[in-house]
Every structure is written in structure tokens, then in C-alpha cells.
Image 1 (cartoon, rainbow, N blue to C red):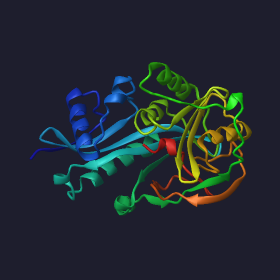
Image 2: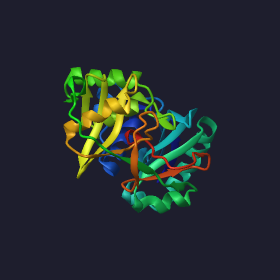
Image 3: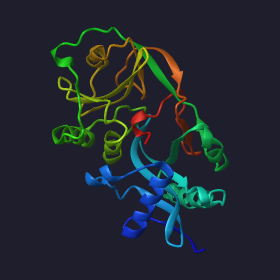
Length: 290
């Protein structure tokens, strides 16, 4: 068995194809839509283990420009962290993390990832720490939207709708000064996969609203706009979705709503390295949770 560790290899077509096969087997992840839109990004940086020329484990790093308490930062998100079942418990991910973390410390300000309870212990053993997050809940007036408050559900298979989202993704303002991010290609990945059926265009605001309903609440994932609307502009739109509370899944410092309560985020767990130093309650924008 010939074991080889490689990094920064996406310019090697065969190695990248093997990585994609591994990602499909481990995660059921198909990059086809992302590639067809020309969004494969050289910033998306792979570290992987190959056995006899085939990828068997990967850990990818995707840096994004971020804003942390008003300061520009470069955050390194860990993605596509997985190993084929037959090669697990052999220390491959520990070796990949040792190589990736060295590169991250030289090129980025901090590292972070999102996972679930089943793998939380593994990341703790790597030296990352769990960071609790809290999302604000806002009571809504359910005022009926006026002419500027209409919503149109987007169909991202329609070229016109995709082009609208693409333009706003490239030109958007960060949603938060406390904890914001700006990576158009990663955001468009989210639209092409997770947000295909919960994205709306608000013509009066020239903004894309990413929202889903859950029980009595609207869960607001993101507001993608060239100029962030005010809460007074945004709130009436919620009447279209027919709920009386909104869970804001990003730091709402730019919207400034009156938050009635906070909920701890439990549907995914945030881990950070020791250089992440944001104090006080916050929530990472849900739209970055690829």
C-alpha cells in the first residue's frame, strides 16, 4: 500500500477527480452544479491522503474575508473533512490537520468549522474548542407588506433568477459588522444546494431574503443586498410568510431589531481555534455553514 499526503493539488485533474469521488462516497456531495457555474475556486484548498493514487481522506480549507467586531479578518473554514470507512482510525485526519493547521496559521487569522455531536469529540482532541452560539428571536408585528414589501420566490434553475442572485452575491454588503463574511463563490454554493427552495427576491429592497418557516417562526438565514435594509423595511415582508416570530440566524447589529429572547444554536456545533477571540453572545451567519 502506497500512502501519500498531498496538498494544493486541484490543478491536477486526475487527483481532483479522485477527490470528488471520495467526497461523493463520504458525504453524498456532488460538485457538478458548482462547477457548471464556473465557481470552482482556487481559494478552496485541499489536503488529502491518497492510497495507491486514489483519494481516501480529505480536509479542505476555504478562506473567506470576514468582519469581526468591525475589524477585517481572514477566516479559514474547514470543509469536506472525511475519510472512507475502510481507512478510518488510522490517524489520517490527524496528519491532515497537522499539515493544514500549519498552513492556516501562516495565511489566515483563525480557523473554524461546523459539525454535529457525533464528531465533536474528535475536534476537541485535535485542539479545537467548542464555542456556543445564540440566535436572537424577534416578535413580529405581522403588518401587511405594502407595494415595496412583496416577495417573489426564486427559481435558481431560471437564468434570470440565478443572474440576479449572482450579481447581489458579488456586490453585497456584509450582513454584520460584529460577525460578517464575504465569499461570493461559497455563498452561491449555498444557493445552488441548500437554499434552492427558500430564497426570495424583494424588489422594493433589491434584496434576496433567505428564510424558512419552522413552527410559529420564520428562520432568517441571510439578507443579500447592495445596501442593507433597515428592520423597519424588512419586518413587513415577514407578513408574507405568516409567522409571528423571527429567529435571526446572524448577528443583527445592522438591522437593530428589538430582540425578545435568545436561543442557543443546537442544530450544528461551532468549533474554533485558539486565535478566535470574539467575546459575548453571537451567532455565525447560517449562510456560511456549508
